[in-house]
Length: 437
Image (cartoon, rainbow, N blue to C red; front, side, top):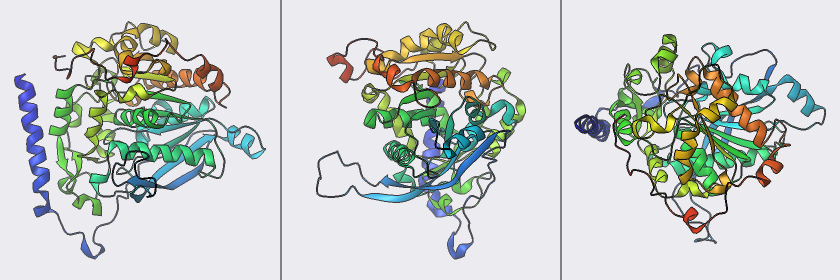
């Protein structure tokens, strides 16, 4: 508890610094500051890979939260922005579409806080770490994005970048994919894949709309460890003072934060024995900002929101992910090894499904797997192939590379009849989970 108080004290100091930033922000007038122009190295190159669309997609961020149906005569106030997206697939899939054949199912990849497209398509040894390239080999297309506020996407006022706004932009992207507004081809089958905060976003989008064919979460939980969240906040520095983030107008907004250099390895992002030390340097160099509004997603873990998910759902966590692995790491127990198959990982990690199931509706048919020798950033560990292969394994069953399995899987997807309790918040676990690891 003493360590928790120290962490909370550091977080408060960060918040105090953020509030004081306007007095020390450098001028952004006269065009002296340009947008973030870093080369994030995506999309990576790989044999047989093609990316028919790479660019900006228009989205609108809700400016206020208006309950559905309360103002039928008025449009919902919103602010325009853009999302950088990279739609990639195999050359064989592209040629099939060009010949009038069935388009591939698309997996829309949503990264977590301080990351971007490079999390899913690592420019460092992509043959080992690129989730995108491995999914393409399995026959899927991927739409890999920078969320609004990150990377090459728009950086509006930080107060607008809320979990609800992020979920609505993902909803808009699903609509665009199905409507043919991303590269000119209609993609009728779309699955969602999130990591960390990206999982919070795709879970919220699914709870609100249930418009994807499946949702796969990684590196998240219905009970994020509060003290680790405080530790994360305590490592943050206002973007205006950050030495890694390049000059850009949005850095003048005190709501944008970045990780202090050298602090990221102190957090559960990586399990050191399973990590190439060179990856830690890449992780620090390519970090993106987060906003003070995005942690509001944690409230959704306690109010029953995720019980609104009615589409096939899978969760994948690392054995050593102290952000999300429950009291004493109990929910991420596993007897699996780094050479085990997705089927073996799911069987050996049954404790995770048991722990998380009370937070979901039975129609989500929650399944789960635990990846050994990995921390929070599953895609950036040496055995990243296990996480990617598990994503593909579930996608094959619940959707298929052309979507042929979506209807039969969903028609049989119910673990038990729904009851009134399935609309209420889950109170069966510690709130909050404060037991030490």
